[in-house]
Length: 228
Figure (cartoon, rainbow, N blue to C red):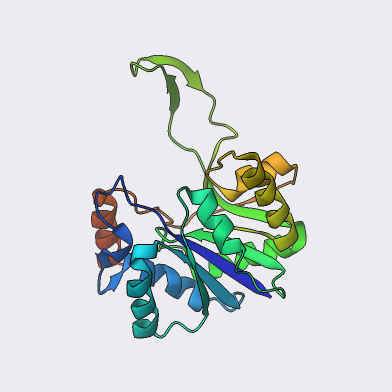
């Protein structure tokens, strides 16, 4: 069994309002995201990690759009890694592969999700990623440039990040028990010593973080660069 944990428990501090309920076209961001996993044949069940104050609204949304793969709602934690940990506790015993995805990434295609799952079955741990193409500089606290950074082997992590369930559970337990924080699952796997493969993504997979990202999403959909 393959399950997905969709993380929708954030506070949207940088956005200033709940970005997941903002509309892209005729649907909220989170509905587009769930739909991608709903339409992916490789995904059997979905655990949705939600803010407690949004639980009722999300239950209504799931009912309105007829999402059938949502098997459980878990409460979000004070930090992202704690939200993921809460979601992992809801996995059914039969689950062998786990795909963790940020709800604020509604553009990932069902086919890319399938590719990640198939790769994870072979190697145990895989993440969507994109090579860094911009020139990278390191700066001090005063925003003065201090040095250039070689971008040759630099990649920007995306989601979904997909793993063997036993590997991910062990890695996350180590993080939670230590009291440390990680910003993504690959970091937890690195700390636990597991190898992670990257799957290069050439498609749009931006994370809705700032208001301008919603404007970009609308424009991309309007000119047909994103297939919803």
